[in-house]
Length: 185
Image (cartoon, rainbow, N blue to C red; front, side, top):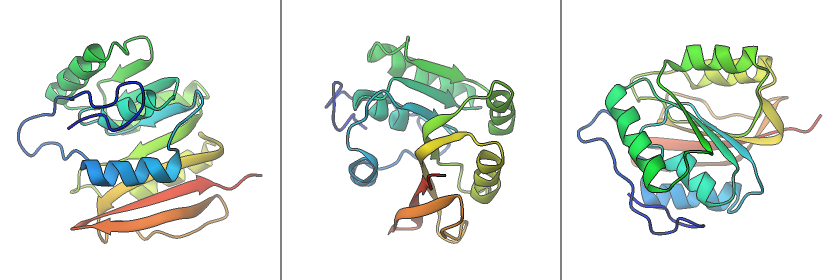
């Protein structure tokens, strides 16, 4: 896996061996970033299921200023730390080795908001709707903010709401990606 564009273009990232994480394939990642960016101006990112940190690090490479990465798997956290260090992004990345529910609660208590939120939970978890509801009820997404969801087809019904509109929704093999944008008040 590699960084596709920006200041870290072509830099190779480590991934966790085995099937515990499923990194977004480069083709899919490129489509996502071409839709939401492709470049950013100091946006703040939340990656709720960090894996290797690739999505957050790609966002930083393309101009985001800060990335908050949540990952509860200790081995995956070690990979993320190595990737952050290899890109010298320690000052811009904040890694939390904890469960997503605990992290969301902590971010809410600190009144934190984000411009881009990546939701790529393990496929066995059907939690996209629950997380989006929490983000919405706690106003954690900045105006015109983006939520990128990757999930197994059938685990989430992509639909517009009074809070979010679909920018793009597409399938890759057994997974689906839906990109939402917050509707301005």
